[in-house]
Length: 229
Image (cartoon, rainbow, N blue to C red):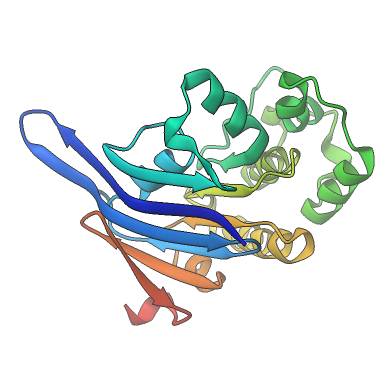
């Protein structure tokens, strides 16, 4: 089952000089895929993530998430769809500092007036190892713990896809390895569909499929290891 499909996805910026950030990208992800997108800075990989998250609009082409063409949504429709169907994990965590870990995790549900599934919450907390952190505030946590909270928040709505933008980029090696392992564990235990934008060789090698973005074009590398490219 296709969770994500792009058709001739193109994004062009024009600030005096025309720049093709993405050029005719055709890309699919199925339920349970764990995919890494690698590439140099400026190659277009973060642009792809922003388009899949509905934060930006393509110049041309279509994006289907669970068979919904999100390029046709207006701003309000996209906001609601993203909150319910797309989990996003950022390099710098993006937690709200003046609310507890519990409220940070539950925020997507609270904004949508949705009931909390306590058993599912317990499962997420157990997988991520943050059961005892719910009453703390973000500043009381380490960087690795904050990223675990951010992952929990991305999972709480049972989204169609999780998009992770350099999720280990602000962490030391030990925490990077732990977070990498947790993405793998979440993927296997919850059958979550996950796309990770990364420069980290170990993160890429932990994924089932690896793509390289070069000058706005996406190339499938298969299951070979990142260091071979």
